[in-house]
Picture 1: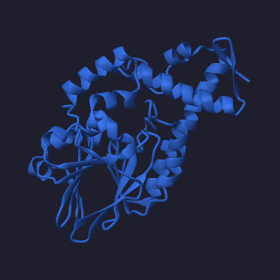
Picture 2: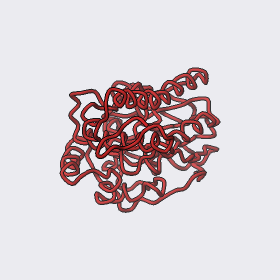
Picture 3: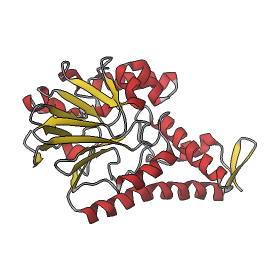
Length: 297
C-alpha cells in the first residue's frame, strides 16, 4: 500500500476510499519494544510485513470489519475492552453481540466468512477504561471507553504522539450507528460529548474521514455527526405526525438506511435503532402507544 500517513511513531495505512465501509484505515504504532496495530480492517491484508509482524493487536471494538486481518497475525496478542471480549473470542459471542434473529445471523455468518476472513480469537484478553500500554522508546497508548456503538467501544490514544484513534465515532455523513444488541443510544450521546475532550492533535477514524489535524474542523465534523441523531428523531416524529405507525411500518420506512440497501442486518439494525428512539421519546412523554401502534402523545 502506498497511502501511508505518519505522525511520529504512528503510521496510518489508508483503506480503500479512505477506509469507507467495508474497508477501514489501519493504524500501526511502532514502539521501541512493541509494534501494535489498532484494529485489523480489510486494508490489513494488503500491507505486508509492517502489519504481519505486529506483536500486539488492540481492538477498539468488536465488529466484522475491524477483525478482518486477525487471521494474518496468529502469534500476536489480541486485546479488546472487556465488554466486547466474548464477541472476539467466538462466533457465539459475536452472534450475541449482534443480537439478530437466527435466520439473519446465518446470512451474516456467511457474509463475514466470505468477505471479512472471519477468524475468532479465543486467546484474546480484555482491557479496561484508562488502561495503558508502554510500547518502549517513550511510546505510550491509553484506552478511553466510549460506549454506544458497542458496549466496549473505545478510543485508543497514542499519548506520546498526540494521536487519537476514535474508531467508529467516524464522523461520516451516515452518522452514529447503534443498531446492535450491545449498542446504546444514550451511551452514544454521552460518548459524543466525551470524545471532544480527548487530549489530541490528530484524530483518526476507522472509516472514510481518515485523518483530521485541525481541532476546529474536528469539532465541527463531530457536531454534524452527532446532529444526525436529532435528525433521525425528527424524522421519526414526522412519521408519527402523519399517522400512527406499527413498529414494522416504521421499519419499512427506514430511519437509518436508504431504501434499497440490502445488507443482511439492515432490518435488524432498523428495529433496534427505532426502538431506542421510541423508548427515549416515551420516557420524555412525547410518544405513546395505542394498541400495536405508536402515536404522538
